[in-house]
Length: 407
Image 1: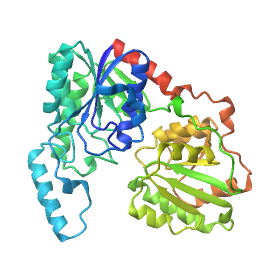
Image 2: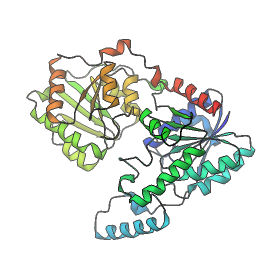
Image 3: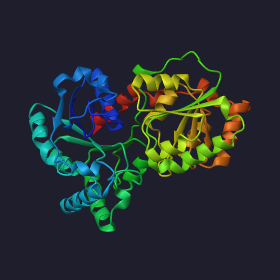
Image 4: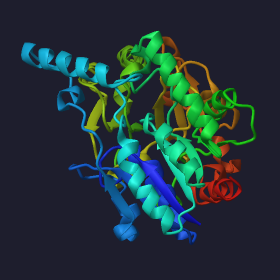
């Protein structure tokens, strides 16, 4: 097949948003398919997944996008910045009929000439990933006119998103407009792919057709961590990834639990990745916790390899998520400690005996810490009989290609 992949974020642009399609593009090409990627233009570089696209040469095309006011990309710190922020936000509200936080507003107009040109060169399929989401409508319509197969791919929920992209802050009128766009994109799609079965179920409710599929992000078998010799007798708990603001309740409970432990000196807790200043201030108050910030992919892989227990903090609306870090923990056969409300993910780790679940309350977390320290309960014993192939990108790419061929 000759495939066009559209992903607003893509290497060399930094950020985890480019990871899904950097990986699948690599594996699609490795399996003999021709792939061209359209992505937003960016002056930033430093993606952790740039090595995955080294073989693409001129097959990654950066496409201009109507610029968002730069002030909206930061939190205003003084009166002048607050005034500028409000003026910029007012202008965006006038420009957008639905979600004024969506970075892809108007992008489809810039993408269409590239899609038409590639269509003349024999490209038959378009996979467009969201979020952001608004550009999907224009792309789905042009693909229909060009008789190209259109697959909408969702890394995140759209109008029922409670964590990001600002959907929880929209007025009912603007949200209804977004819902109309969402329904139109689903109807225009030859196939709809989501990263979680819960998301797939939601989209399936918008149209009763057999075109909905779940393909998780998965782990890359090229990057499975290898064991690292221990340098400390302390038990190492490791978190790798983005610590989302909506997990601050969980973070507070975790810190409180550590404060209550009489033998917390037997633990080393390491956080690698991005977090808010508020989260940092909460965690910094515990001597058992070490905050490393953003690190390279090799450093993150080594951190996972050295862990006794790996950690996930899930927001209340995403307790069904098998995130990238979840898959990388699985790749390393590391016990996974999920701190969240009840949900599919914590149920999964306990059912398969590859981890343990705690509620985001200090008393629940203390109980798990006691078990870790006393060794009364061994986590992750189920890995001996656990089949991780369902999380392997090599296998997932085959499954995705089958969906594309049958779209």
